[in-house]
Image (cartoon, rainbow, N blue to C red; front, side, top):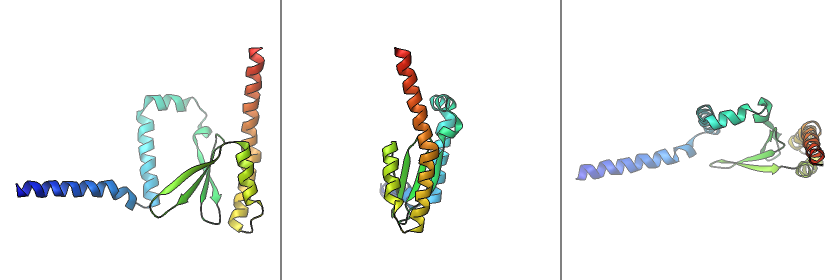
Length: 153
């Protein structure tokens, strides 16, 4: 019986180590693990494969834009969203900070008068994306809406 207790104690200890092992991984290891999980799910799920194959490849990508003076990282997705990641002591947090054109203008205005070189570089990159990608997406969406309205009349 005492050996049985030792086995179960060891099992719970191992289980606890496994549960908290992720928190001990480096950011690179976490990203690699996440990528492998996503690749596995996407390659083995027929619904995901069929839905993503309907979209142009560039719409399934995420692009790192840059960093602000606090070393927060900014990421752009081809569907107009902008994410901000803040790396804390244990995990990184992703927050959607832009969904609309107004959100984009607000975040650009936030960095406009900064004296930080990182903020200035980020401001330029965000402005470029707004002018070349977000505005173009808005036009496509507006044109589709207009065509639907015309088609209903």
